[in-house]
Image 1 (tube, rainbow, N blue to C red):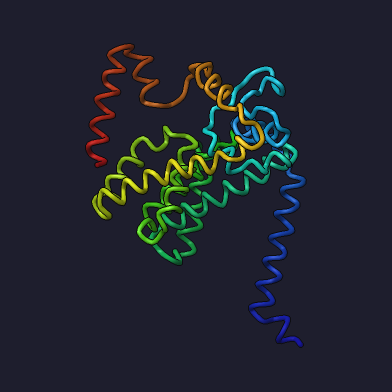
Image 2: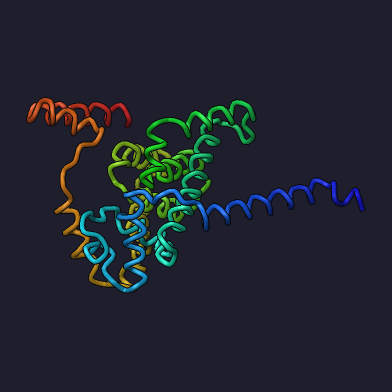
Length: 269
């Protein structure tokens, strides 16, 4: 009997059960305020959608703010709308943490990275100031980075439809794919031929359509509010090369940014 309780399988089951209990307590009880980006760009649109209202008309819930994440993000995570904001935010925090752990794991280049180095790297990655800001705001960048790493490492082993779905999800924020996606498509053409690349591009558009089905199902007229949000989204200070160059050098700064864009794109390809 003692051997059964001390067996690795039993101890693993106890550990898994303990972790699940902790996760449940975290989701239901963690009091950290929900981030602005998560609230406005994912939870509120999902909440409105499951209540058959326009997911991109946040004026019914908040006085300021708009939703500007692409519809594929809402189409993927719309069940979060059934949860209260705090619980949904806590769950999103856990999903993001898992994504960060996976990024560090994949970056190691090992199936089983050295435990000490992995632990230290993970702690440093979590304490990196932009990462802290990312968790605080409830951003989606970590998950998109994880998806791109999966594509770059395992792309040749994945079915084209799955690749297309992953790429469609990365387009939740297209600006994050400005270098990675052209490089990936170019690499895909070299390795698989132009005909398969055309098929992949078709599957990407098909995947975008599939992920948008919940929006068309619950509120077919969402597109009007979506484009209105994009057009009315105000300019705001953010740490990008375009903003910094434009702010400091005006029109010349924009020209410098385009030169930088073409230079880095060429190096990337």
